[in-house]
Image (cartoon, rainbow, N blue to C red):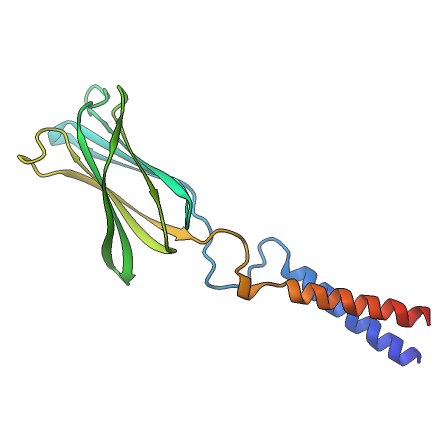
Amino acid sequence: MKNIMFFFGMFGITALLNGCMMWMPGMEHDTDMRKQQPAKTVVKEFAEKDVTLNLDVPPLAVGQGAALVAKVSRVQREAPILGAQVTFVIEREAEPHHFTIVAEREADEVAGKGEYRVRYTFEEPGLYRITARVWTGEKAQAEPLAISITQDVHRQGGHKAEGSTTPLVIIGGVVMAVMMVLMVL
């Protein structure tokens, strides 16, 4: 009887600890889960045109709207450029080093700040390239100035449903309950 109780006790402790270890922060066992990247900012200066472009992209997640922001200013005076035309092109990596366009949106200008914004919701995880194309003069008469960032779009949440550790925790709890009953008998 003592051997059986010892066996169930050790099995229960092992199952419980295994379930607990799966829930520890930083112990991701799902290799497809992508870690959230921090917000990114890229600055590009076009000295010959006296223009500086800043592109700000927040951390991106599937299903969450993100504000993509381009700031346009003069290099010499650091004054904002008002009335520019800005288009955001959003591309998803279809295969390594090959991107396909998923959206192209005209940006709205934030009054008096030289900031141009687009709100976009990413529908699929993956690697995306976000490009702001900027025209400071007539759109039809000039080549746009461009600035790009690549950013990973991750899934929301810590565990995927098919990779859940809930069954291990339940099994560990049941084994512990059985072990306690056997110890009392």
